[in-house]
Length: 284
Ligand SMILES: [Zn+2]
Ligand SMILES: [Zn+2]
Image (cartoon, rainbow, N blue to C red; front, side, top):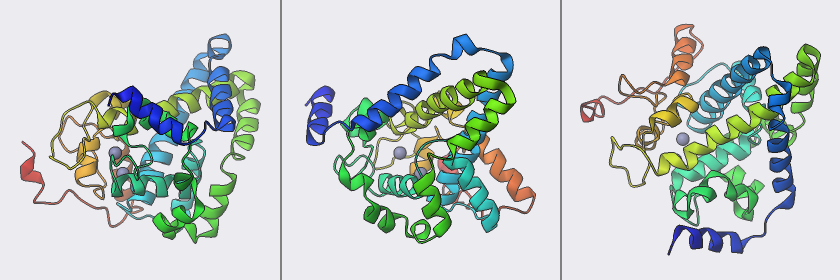
């Protein structure tokens, strides 16, 4: 079966969700206004928020801290990091964490992995959200896969109202730099951060080198690792999902690890899961 026919079959199962399609299309169109609102400050703001919401919010927060519990921080800090993750506009923490744990539990399974790369590049990159299968957007399923978050009222609140948090952010950015900051800090930043994150579900299950012979087709891909602050070392991550560090070799730059290391040095991150001794000799 060709990749295209797999995608068509997958798409045929569930209808297109027009609300989601309209939402993503609108945000992309507003991001395309960027050249008319350009300023160096606005570009700097985009890069800063891409790092803050992407590396700290998603990679360090939603992914390594909440999904894998690869280290621990005081509860107040965990909530603060989760709020930063929520601002990345990638869904609430319970939805994100449950989906990601499903991805690890059933990696590349065409039925059970929400963004299985076996269903083709576009499916794993974004179509899985545009043709939503009920079981991947189901609150009972979330509670099963993320019970630690689902019973916490703070996470319940963030999960329900994540979208609304863009409003105070937008008002703040408008006050600081007018429409230019809103276009760059909300819309352009959201689009760039979406596609960077989505590359982890698509390209790092297709291209790159493999350090570990895992059951899946996960790969280490340098340019994805740069765009995602270290998450592109995805083969290392699938081999040892609970290890806090994703880049293992000296050249595998892992910017998110630097932030975890800093938190550890400051005494704020504890129980940081290290690379196991038996795994190190596997690296040449
Ligand atoms: Zn993966
Ligand atoms: Zn993971």
